[in-house]
Image 1 (cartoon, one colour):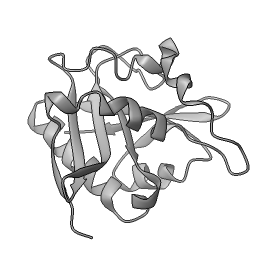
Image 2: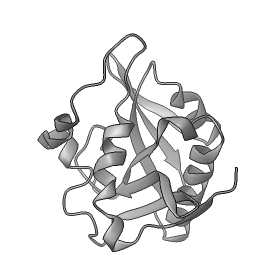
Image 3: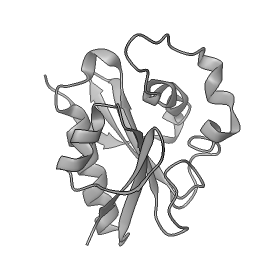
Image 4: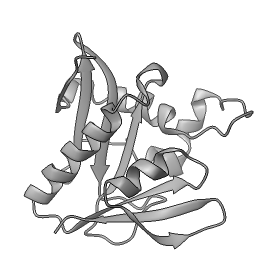
Length: 157
């Protein structure tokens, strides 16, 4: 599958809401929540007013269609560890998952943030999410464990 990874364009920022919804982990056998769930303040922190100085996003594109995104920003989200560490979010549309595109997006973002001088990046992921294995392969380590989720950090040094 031929795809490119590039920085998001300002006119594409509204698409982050679609990818935020796609990032919601739905355990097997559960119904998807209504799209309005992303309007909750604890989720809006991922996308509201995107484009500030510490906001970064890369998208995966196939034939001029964006099919996935990885973005990072310093925010007080589920994966927050401190005010110098960006938190990460990633998602792809269903039919593009498990093809290595997410891993490529992640590698791109990790290298970019390292080049920008960030020391580490964090994320929150539900324990049952298959993406935990991808994060571990990319160097993320569990630093905190809650009932249903891990807080993971990847050192960028």
